[in-house]
Image (cartoon, rainbow, N blue to C red; front, side):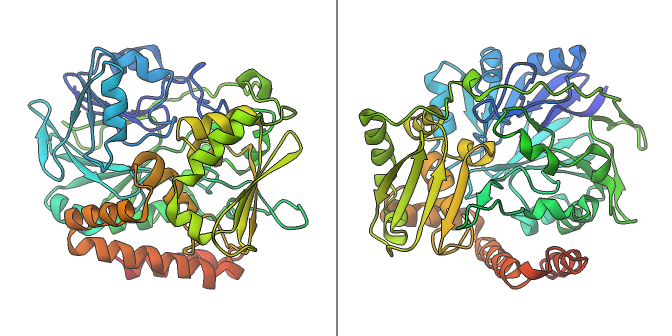
Length: 454
């Protein structure tokens, strides 16, 4: 058989009679993510599980543990690991040092993996990788978590192909930090609570890339920790992914096999959902009563001292651990800062191993913003400066950040500025239309935005 099977969270298995490539294989079972906060609710069938393990090539798009899972990755010592060419090369160096057979794909050129399968890697400055997979005459646009970036380049590359499948993260929006509280310590309902049509969003992104099929992807998880299970009310149910799909876009059910030898031969697996078993935070060494020790405070301070840009933009970052505050003073305005409340172990581990995004996405950590609109606020853009450019891109100083930006600008050419403008416009869109997020007009405004940048 020649074709593609989507499975798990963000795995596509590409077959050329035998399994050639598997992407981002988080194998599930007792392999958890984000300090045990996430589990994979749909079990991977045994035969597909074996196909993943026996794939000649394993591709990892980025370092999040629902993509590069620290438990699953050890199953692939005998495979060839392929990666995008990112500034900093953290994934490459980390995997190489652990004895994996790792290769970096040449940027924006087709690499032949077998007679009927080729791939093209497009790295993005947020340390995620878009992978174009060509199987026979089909194109799979694997955006995973990268979002709608580099669309002009990709449209040009794939314009002559008939069937183009979009694989992209989607949903109501819980796969990000949503555990926010206001100054009175009241929980702030996230945008995900409004349940805007997921199919409409998928259709808009598909059209941005000139794709004519969409397959829900990189969106299948649930929360299992007692301190994060509350977030399951914002997790998108399977039936919601087709809600709002445009008439000129073909929706493919998740966990489908797409036959690249025969048009119309697409079969979806009827997977059974595992029953949620709530786990205690202490099962993952997180005791909310444990206070920080002296050595812990040094690890945290040393970690945040590296981020020069952040130091100048905020006046403080406060950590409440074991009901005691640890306040890091910084050089920015004294009334601008961030407060985090979380358990000791995960905080120290995140700082020690430079994986702060795992705290944000795990959604057991409580966050309060002071004179900031969000963690994506252009004033600081914490979510890029710390976990993306810093932890994974290894760019900490202002000089390193300038070099980092220049390198991606050089790779992307004029499209760098196009994406920059589009992202800035999105920030203004969110600001000006935030009062409409609870209404039907939000979906309309979003549609106008994506049509503008097609």
